[in-house]
Image (cartoon, rainbow, N blue to C red; front, side):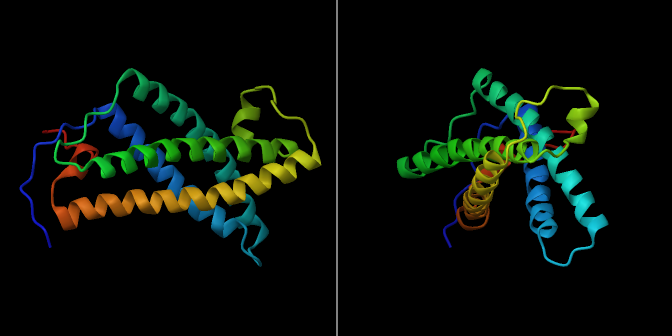
Length: 187
């Protein structure tokens, strides 16, 4: 196992860390809820509760991701350490771009699937926001298919992202994860 000295890496700002971890926790919750809610034999009240959570948390993720994207454009992330190999920097950048893209694909396809299917999104409906998609069975089917396949890509990228964080933490021991890890109030 290669051991390197901990470098004092430039950290992400507190808002960037908060947005990252908020979205990460919600996405992991949605993946779990999504897998359970489509299981055969699930009691209807539990299925309904999971769908309610899934739809409305998806809207929250969409809003947080728009804020996160705007924040990232206005506040670029800190540079990777100079010791990072070029290929790793390229893979990290591509992974982040694809993660953002697939999260937005999931939000849009989920919204489209629900609205084109004629179903409510209770949080948006309570705000009396206009529906952006009309009820249309063909569109619902396409959106459902996109959502299902994009989910697989998103899960694979999340696994790659977590794997890279674990690699840096436990194999390289280079402290890179500390850039995004939540800080204690005394830090």
